[in-house]
Amino acid sequence: MAALGLWTATRRGLDSRRLALAGVLLAVTLGNLYFWGTVNMLGDLADPTDGLVRFLGPYYHVDLLLPTVAFGAVGVRRGWEWVRTTVEERVEPDRVRPALAVAVVLLATLGGATAVAVAAEPVGDNLEVTRQYEQAYEPFETDDFADSVVFLPTPYGDWLNHPFQALRNDPGFDDGTVYAMQHRQFAVVDAYPDRTYYRYVFRGQWAPFLGLSVEPHVQRVRVVEGGAVRTDVSAGLPGEAELVSLRLTDGQEDAYATARGAETLNLTVRVDDAETRLSGPALDETVTVPTPNSGPVAVNAFVDYGTGAGVTYRVVVPVERTETGVRALTPRLEMCRDQRRCGGEAAYIPGSHREGIRLNATLTEADS
Image (cartoon, rainbow, N blue to C red; front, top):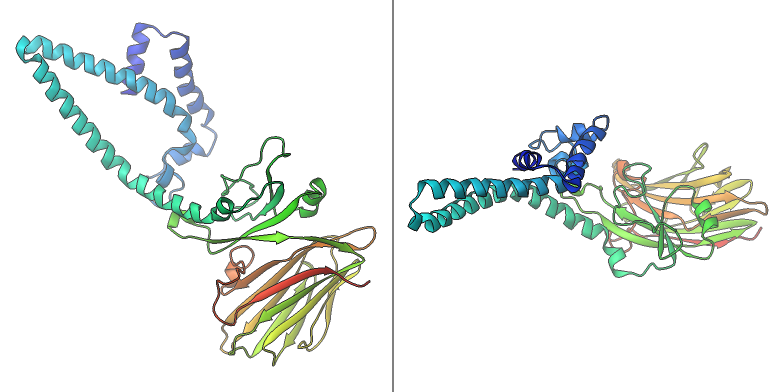
C-alpha cells in the first residue's frame, strides 16, 4: 500500500511535505547501511536467537513507520477509488451500494484477520517482556527518589540506559533523580555532594526476553570519611556449614583465611590509607592487602557444607584514598549459590532467602 501511495503521490506531484516524507524513507535506509541495525532488519523473525528482530521487528528502522503509514493511507485511498470505479462501471446502478458494502466487509475482514495473525505472537511476546520490566522497575514506582543519586548496575556492559531505558536523566542533571553507573562512584559523589545516595541491585538473570524476572532492591548508601573506616559484617551460617573459606582482595592481591565452629560469622574490614585488614573472632588469622588508590575491596566467604556444595557471601566496599585518610561507601552485598551470578546478579535481599541465610554490613568511621 505504501508503494502504491508513493507511486500515486509522485504521479500527482510531490509538494514539500510529501517530498520530506519520501526523503525520510531514503535517508533512514541509506543512513543504516553501515550500521548493524541493517543486519538486525535482515534477521530471521522465526529464530528466537536472531537478535532484537525476533521481538521488536526492524527496530532500528522505526523512523520509516511514519512515511510508510502516510503513503500507505494514500495507497489505501487509491485502491478504494479503483474498487469503487470498477464496481460502478460493471454493476447496475441500483446494486452499487450493496456491492460496495460487501467489498468493504470483505476487505475489513481480510485486513483484520491478517493483522491479528501477524501481530498476535509478537504482541504477546512483548507483553511478557513488559511484565518482567514492570517487576524490575517496581521500586521506582513505589518510592520517592527526588533530589537523590541512584547508582545502577551494568548487566549489558558500560551503558547507562541499556537495559534501564526508563531511568533517564534530565538534560541539565540538576533536577529530580540523577542516575549513574556504578563506576567512578566517588567522582559522582563529588559532583553531587548534597544529595541522598542509593544503589539499585537485583537478584536473578537479567533476561526479560526469556520470561525471566529479577528481584530488585534499592539500598541506601552512605559516605564515611576519616583516617580509617571500618565495615562490621555479620553473616548467618546454616546448620550444615562445616567450614568457611575467606578471601580478601583489592583486585590485585589476595589474602586467605578460614573460620570454623561459629553459628554467626562476625567480621571486621578496616581500611586506612595503607592497608585493608580483615579480622574476626572465628578466623584462624588476621589478613591484609594494600588499600587501592580508588576502587573496591571485597570479602568473599564460601560457606562449605562439606559436600562440595555451599553458598558464597560477598561484601564489596568501594574505597578511595584522600589527603587525610580514606573514604568509603556502604558495601554492596551478595549471596551467591552459583559463582557465575556473583558480580551483579546475586544481590542479597533481606527476607528473600532460606532460613539461616542472612547478611548485614555496617559502615562507620574507625579509630585511627
